[in-house]
Length: 146
Image (tube, rainbow, N blue to C red):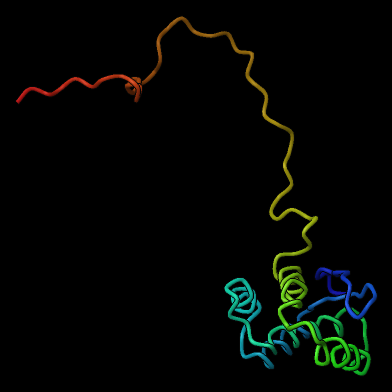
């Protein structure tokens, strides 16, 4: 596998594996004429097209290990022939896309945190601060002379 996030979500009455590797992302872009971030934005804005959802789920199933035939049958039987409205699939499509773009939700982005910094135990100097202190925002400011 290529290291892109594998996502396990219910679809068609069972837990299924979904993944959008580079080949599946390219196929999705070709079918939808949109990149993955644009598809995410469409879903977030409730401006998605039915094939944005359908093709994301289909490509995710294939990338997750289903054959083309298995994915076709699953999508046909559980997406195309559903009776509760297509909006029910927005969360699944969103999860598949965000896992591919941003990684799995249980892994934080960026570098791992190191140890927390500790305070220096150096002896404090007896001198005042090295730069002028700003007035506190709670006090009254003096009016300048005209």
